[in-house]
Every structure is written in structure tokens, then in C-alpha cells.
Image 1 (cartoon, rainbow, N blue to C red):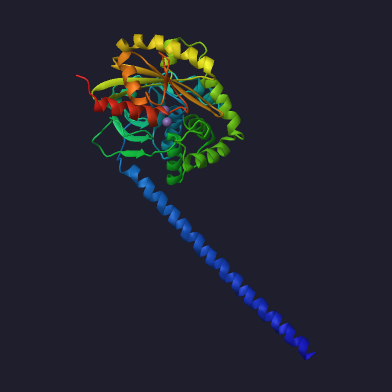
Image 2: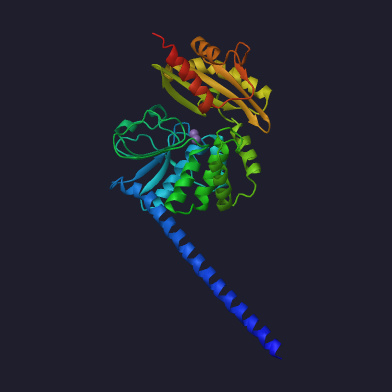
Length: 374
Ligand code: MN
Ligand code: MN
């Protein structure tokens, strides 16, 4: 009997100790949670304070990507304008030209309206996304009020002299930088913006396969696809790719200008038009058509030289054909890639293929700066 009493005492003691322990644990974790929340709130406040630094902005803010708008440029403009709107600004996304077939596919699938065309930026408040070069931006930009630049290319020619938000990061797509900014501002992405951003990331990183892809791009794609309700991003990318290689209803000149960018280096102006092909036969056909069309574009664009870059990039195939527009352009490619590429009299063939931004532009710049003509 006495023994039984002792056992009950021990059990009671164990229960009391356990209860006190559990109580302490929960109070502790509550303190931990609220400390964490306070840290998060401080983080959001710190990040949002850059907006206060912009001061009062009178009138609408136009969010614009580059000319020859691609899926990243358009998705980023839509997403960043939506973010600014949620933060209380009067912001609208705009485009600086006809969107390409890939972007058209993304917007159509997402039920998203094509942003309106901005003819001239003079006197406008501007946010630039996915570029920072005057040559690639809106007409009249030198007379505009640039309040922010969000980009993942090299620092370009646009300067303002004003305090501005300049968020440039070497990651796979501008939309990923914008996703990070949403997180830093403590704002949820809405499904339509998320849908457009999925298109941006898939397009610029070529379904996370290009060597520009970072951890942030993978995380952003996963999170945004879930919000957008896109279950299979591989299949979605395949459809985007099919749309991107269909140049249906376009003339050779329109194909050259479909994904076209202008640059300046060593006192020379040059441009590169990127073209996608599905296989070697269609690539060879496009190479010949681009070789014929480029020389005629030099006068109207005012370029010193122009190139076309025809790429096959899907599944495990990665090939680039570089097409020089004239002899000067051919000499530049010969110097840059002569040892690595096969030249057949029309184009230089590189396997694996190369990125315009990461390889081709730096290589051309290096040569133009090293051997300035005149
Ligand atoms: Mn772009
Ligand atoms: Mn981009």
C-alpha cells in the first residue's frame, strides 16, 4: 500500500515537471516567433525605405522594358507595375514595340492584356526593366524622369544624376530580381503577374538550362508557378519554345528585328538580331535568309555593322550560327571565334552554342575597343 502511494507521488512529480517543461518550451518558441516576426517587419521597413528616398512622384510611372520586347521584358514590366500599384503608386506597364510570338503565347495563355505602346518617353516618369541602354530604350528617354532601373545586363549608358533605385544583379532573368523585390517589400505576387513572370524566367533561362541560371531563378520559378497554377513548367516551356521558333507571317526583315539589340563600343555602333531554329536544316535556311537581309538594314538603323545569331537550343542540342552582315563584321567574328568556330562562307558554327549577353557582346566589345578603326 505504502509502495503504491510512492509510485503515485513519483508519477505526479513527473507530470508536473513535464508540464512545466512543455510550458517553458511553448513560451520560449513564442518569444522566438515574435522576435523573428519583428526582424521580418524591420527588414520590410528597411527595404521599403528606398521608395521614400524617391520623394513625391507627380503623375503616372511608366514601366518599360527594351525595344523588340521579349518575354522577360514584358513580364517584368507587368510585374513591376503591379508591385508599384500595390505600394500605392500610379504605375502602368508599357511596351516599346510589337511583342514576339513567344511573349504573345505567354500573355494569351495567362489571359493577360498586352501592355499599351509607349511612343515617346519625353516628360514621363520611367522605370526601366531588363535594359539600361539608351539605344535599346524609349525614344525621348533623355528628356524623361528615370526613377528606377531593374536589370540583369551590364551597366548601360542610361544615367540620371538623380537619386534612383538601381537594382542590377547577375541572375537569369529580370523577373527573378522583381520576385526578390516583392519578397523584400513583403508583398504577395498576384496570379496574373506570377504567370507573366514564369514566362520571363523560362524564356531567359531557357527552362533553367542556360548557364546564366542561378539558385534565385529556380526558387522564383517554383514559387511563381505555384501562384500562377502552372503545374508542369517543362510542358509550358516546350509550348513557349514552339511559339518562339514559329515566324509565321513574318518577313525576313521582321525575323531579324524580332529579338534585336543595338550596342556601342570603341566608337562603333553594332547590332545583333537573335533567331531561333528547331533543327540544322531550318537553321541553315534562316542563316541564308539573314545573310541576305542584314546588309539592307545598315542604312536605316545607322549601324556600322550588324550580326544575326541563329540558335538551336532545346533538349540536349545547343548550337549557334553567327552571321556577319558584311566584311567588317566577318573580320570581328574571325578574330573572336576563328579558332573555335567552323566558317562555311556564310556563318560561323559554334557547338555548344553561346549566349548573346554573356559571350557574344563581351567578345565583340573587346575587339572593337582593342582595334578602334579610324
Ligand atoms: Mn530581354
Ligand atoms: Mn532579361
